[in-house]
Image: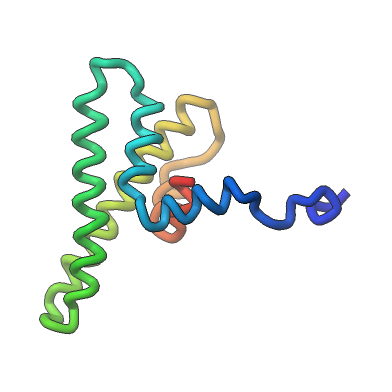
Length: 122
């Protein structure tokens, strides 16, 4: 049977909610995933620090891209912040792959994080 016959052609309400949450509140989604991966009390510092730097890059790339009109030189910093965000996500995705034995490699993780970051978090 095809995906359409099984009713799997469109995302469920929960999947759509997670996608939009990851799109607009990416640091919160990042925190939730990271906290579930490192759920021991000794890892709390890592979770908070990683989330802080992820959030910093998330806000930075948006703010820097918005301010490119004021100063064209800011564009390089905006892209740098966006790429750093992708590195954080790729690292998280690689950790998930290792923990659950999912096939793949870090290049796939990086490019997925770079191109479709809400899907990586959702």
